Length: 477
Image (cartoon, rainbow, N blue to C red; front, side):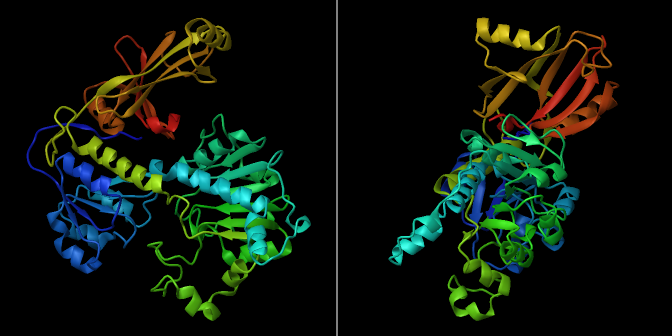
């Protein structure tokens, strides 16, 4: 869980939070316990909520309507927007940031659910479970036409390797498959998945699973040209966003055998709220009443046996509903609640600096032999990166400290010539580096961001290079 922007505080007054979508009751219950004031309004129009939003310090949403510039301008006291879900596409993020509003999402809360759903769809498609079940209910016992495929020996390609992609890759560890990924960020691969170029992924993949966020790069990404760049026919799984796939190009590829089958939890026809399928739907049975008006591509999807559909529920489990709520509470708490007395702060804040040891790094003549020695004699659970020590902070949040031997000729410690480098955990790296610069501390390089946090570097008076880390400890799970 990313625990940035935590503050020491002075108690002034409670914060008012407006909830405009219903969520698991644990969300409001835990916020009440922390001292927040919570109001619920699940029915008023956007215009009506705009009229009163100035009275609130925070708002908790799912996807009922867009938080646009007009809404943000009306929210003159808003300090945070929390979305109980993975993405923030329903929010004008850039404008909110300009207004100093903290944005909070919870991809950690439903990533396990999405990973399991993607695996379930893939196994069902490979074994024709949906088709076979339907046939048996019709009195048909067709064994040969329902002969399945095995995952063993296949290459599964992921596009997007964040929380959801990592979860799916982890689920695939029990299968004898090669898992590769393409992501616009560098250095996101891990022990479960090798990062490759898009070209290599399209050359090797037997299965393509999408885990991209909603943005201009992913919009209509899977189109005719994209599909034609694959070296062989492949299976498609989409648990990300519907508009990543051009449905008419998908159906053409299914008919031509370029795509062997598809598991679609999301469709490009969905409304932004995800609550209805087509833009004019007003009820859950709209498909029955408007079937003749459905797009031709969609009619193909619902009538073919090698397509499996679900109504945007990959992250929609009993467990994830609770996890999403708990994740949102933890992130709100990390920003606005004192570590000393669990009281809510609504104004004055003083940033903390170092909060703990993040890592111990040292040069070694033979890093592998060194790691093996520490594993054999001191019981360290080492891997390619060294050893990750897991612990809890004072608030009970997961935290980690890394121990790593580096090669003797590493340049990572430069410009320092010392044999070691310390890593310190910090809360708000950008703010801390700005403060240190004003104080005359030597800053080395620029901030770099990875899936496990943000990193910056400084030199102490003796020339030791110090690494500062704003952690995302959840990435180590």
